[in-house]
Image 1 (tube, one colour):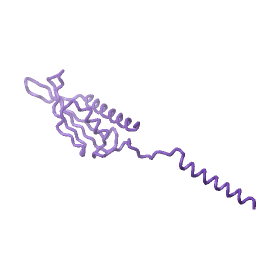
Image 2 (tube, one colour; image 1 turned 30 degrees about the vertical axis):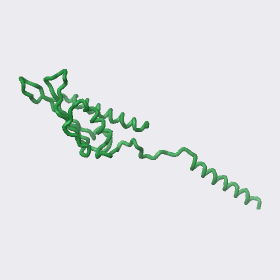
Image 3 (cartoon, one colour; image 1 turned 90 degrees about the vertical axis):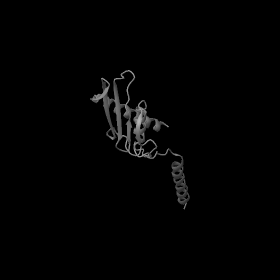
Image 4 (spheres, helix red, strand yellow; image 1 turned 60 degrees about the vertical axis):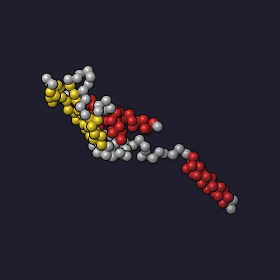
Length: 147
């Protein structure tokens, strides 16, 4: 029966190795982490929300509803073009950080002989604002991943 002690020692060695590898090896990170694309502590995606507020910080706010995901600015006139003013509405439509979860609408008026008259908004203006918000939101998420 000299094989029995050898088998017992081999089983102990295998068990010890299994225990050590389970305790000391590199563990996989859980798939859901703090920088997930779906962060909803305020009702909508928090990256899109913070990025929208940051992008519109130069404009006076009329409404900011984090539960509904709506930001409405008051009229803003750039000091360099006082005869023109803009008003922006941002809607966050989803809890995920996605481009189609963001909708931006803008209104523009020009001053004609003391009266504010509605004027068309260039499509590129709205697209540029959407790009700025989405880029800021992605940067916020990347920063959260690095931390």
